[in-house]
Length: 344
Ligand SMILES: *Cc1c(COP(=O)(O)O)cnc(C)c1O
Image 1 (cartoon, rainbow, N blue to C red):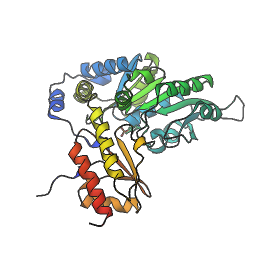
Image 2 (image 1 turned 30 degrees about the vertical axis):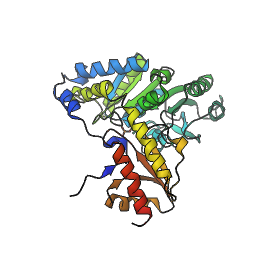
Image 3 (image 1 turned 90 degrees about the horizontal axis):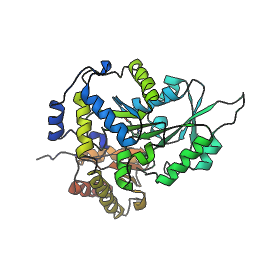
């Protein structure tokens, strides 16, 4: 009998649980473009409160949330300072340039973390020749950095450096609740320092769709206009918001299990002589592993053996733990990788 493959490609692959589906089915709804969906409004209010920001907006994806923030905060020709591997630069299909005509200014961080000196150095002085530095974007947890958590004090220093250079600050907090659980401090610790913050519900929180962008009331009013322009105005979206509310109630604390599973997976991978894993880099639900073979070519072989992962470099694999994989599955994943590398 064929068993289902173990899917560690991303925490986006989670499927809504029976409880979440019930909450969706029972959601009270209205037309959210008219501002009449009570479940969407409830979600927006709860997220704003949890993030320590005034207001919030439900959006279809984290990409749209980030891009709305950039659209509101910048004008064409202005500069956005962000890390080389950050999602808005690396994974959003050139949207900063394509949608807003803003110019990314890239800084290479340590596992995605930027220092105040780097931020200071990247921001420009006031000179007719130079682009105007407008916006600093930080990411927590940092995906390509390895699921890295910003220490609150380090984050505070980075934001302060941005502020003293006259920058607005946006936080891509797609996995901010992973940071909350890993660091043991509320998500607002980071978010309240920013002008805007995005959180995603379709990652480890297990909702099928949805992100929330939060900021001041005036910011959210502008973001709402741009959301309509991009076609992100949704109608009876309470069906989706109900899944996100359910996730806030039931799926935040359990992210700790994903983090423990990731550490267990990393330890088991580290026992394979051919695999290199930096155990101290496993801070949340992601494991990056170096393999001595061509990683993109290894991926289909692993798939055939029942393990789905993504390659993220010529010799790098990324394995992500989530709601739909338990400890035995994570351990089996390491065994499948070992067997595949040892030619068994
Ligand atoms: C997944 C992700 C997003 C948003 O992705 P969508 O697929 O557009 O929802 C944003 N930032 C980071 C760091 C992410 O990992």
